[in-house]
Image (cartoon, rainbow, N blue to C red; front, side):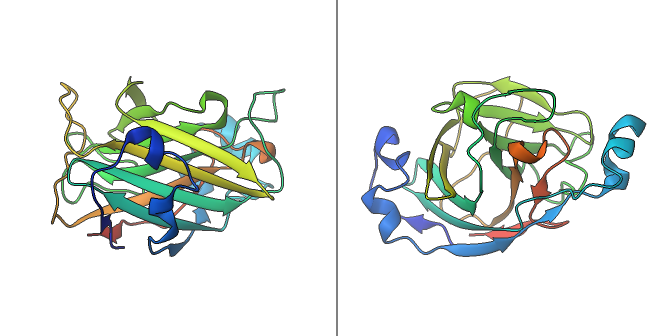
Amino acid sequence: MQVRQVPRFEVDTVLQPDATVWQSTPVETVKLKGTPLDMQPTAAIKATWAEKKIGAVEVTQVAAVHDGERIAFRVEWSDPTENREITDTTAFPDCCAILLPTIEYAPMAVMGAVGMAVNAWYWRADENGRGRHVLAEGLGTTRTIDYELVRGNGVYKDGHWHVVITRAMKVESPDKPVQLEPGQSTGFAVAIWEGGKGERAGIKAISGDDWVKLD
């Protein structure tokens, strides 16, 4: 996938899914699949989901821009229900995330490994306007390291979510998240949680077992 370089933009502007910058940015279709049941962290989760479909969202459209200092991803997918709150034990907020390897060869399918972290830029419908900056070094190790560096904004319209997630390409952090620069090639992945189907944590749809190339 190619990230389009554009003139310098304001954060609040690029966060609007209908902003002019997105109207002329190429969109790539990315297929998703459910995370495997045998990769779930507990026996209880495995038992609960043994007869259920994991990965309600099967395809998404992704576009990306950068201005040399900040990068933004626009993610769109079909969803029959708008879920913005935790309403009971089976309904959760809709969510999505952009995943990036902090170092080459960090394993995506198992959310990294010790010393090979995966950095997730995570948006939740019940926290609209901000994002979570997340690191993981393997299944069950996900932790939020920051609530300020990542911004996210989602608009639900006509049965579709339109979400923009953005962060500075380089940031200062003792936790060593991903650092990006113009001209770089890396990988990325997309994860989507359909809250109305009870998806949360490791129960999600994701873009395959390996990274999608990002230039």
